[in-house]
Length: 278
Image (cartoon, rainbow, N blue to C red; front, side, top):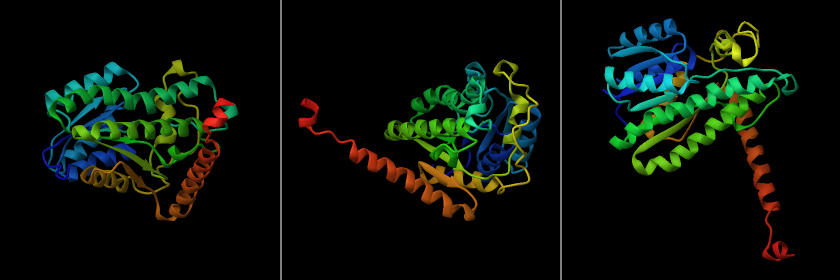
């Protein structure tokens, strides 16, 4: 999808952070944008920023953990701007702390948004893409999706799932003309550590419970992530990483070490026919 002019894009979690940057970067490329967010005021603010770039925008309140809410989003997008050419399943939440201090509801909440939110987006928009024989999904994972780390086990689990889901999408849908990109940012200025503010009571903790400092004063400007995603859409790339340059010396060796250990373990696990029959 080299040309974005006149295309229709949908971005969940578009009210702030990476979602807002995705919406703006897509608008810079000439796409019309449906900005979806659980916080309607934030969605409207991003929509105004998008319209200021000379394209059309709509703001829609959505809860990506609710399948019906995402289906309604798809219907509104189609009726108000047209069938979605690009769907950015970006909405995400975060909890941090030792695994031993997590409660089951922490896992349930993060899964409901970070993983099922992506699943709901795929199922709501894919049928129309299949009918037209084209489209592109951008699913936001993280550098944390490459493996678990101390203090972020629940979040890492969810982002690893998004990585796997997107790899499967790419393998299955590419022959049908539908692209898939997994966006893996790191250390981005955002409000994700304050995601507890939108945590439903049924998930076991007060929404005001602090889980760490706000990242709005730390990390790189998310617009770089948004523009990296747009470049990946244009080029049809599966993997799109975006992180501060000084992180490069740590991320690559970490990934190489992990996959080297996996390859070594695979080699050690080969069982001969003789061993099977013994």
